[in-house]
Amino acid sequence: MREDDGLGCRAAEMMQPEDADVFTCRQLTPELAAAVSVASIVVFLDASVSQAAFTVAVHAVDPELTAAWSHHLTPAMLVGLAARTYGARPAAAFLISGGVGRLGWGAELTSAAERCATEMAAAASRLVKQRYDPTTGWR
Image (cartoon, rainbow, N blue to C red):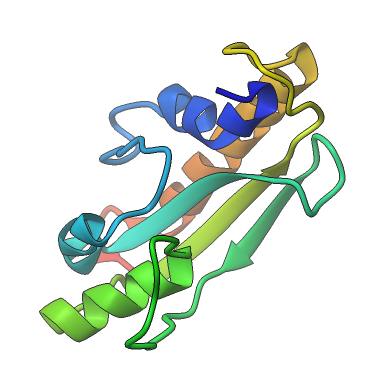
């Protein structure tokens, strides 16, 4: 484990069970496409080395319908794989990323990364709640 690289997993652990079905994984794999294909909304939580440390960013994810990929799947590739393989995809997909501060060897997040993970989980909960209408369902 590389310290703040666990930011996305930590944010997922903070999600409340009534908010959503939560899957925690270190890497996206093709096997997740089945679950993605039946979801109304998907929110990916991930650590980012390409944004400022401990900032939170929310991005819409459009499916990438490429037929070629390697061992590394992006959220867009996974949503596209779900659409191509199962003929269905979520009505909405988002990536919430948190900027990492330290990537040294260690299993614990820094205190700033813990706060960032809390912000990421809160942003995910807000997205899910904004997309659900109790009378009409998912939008």
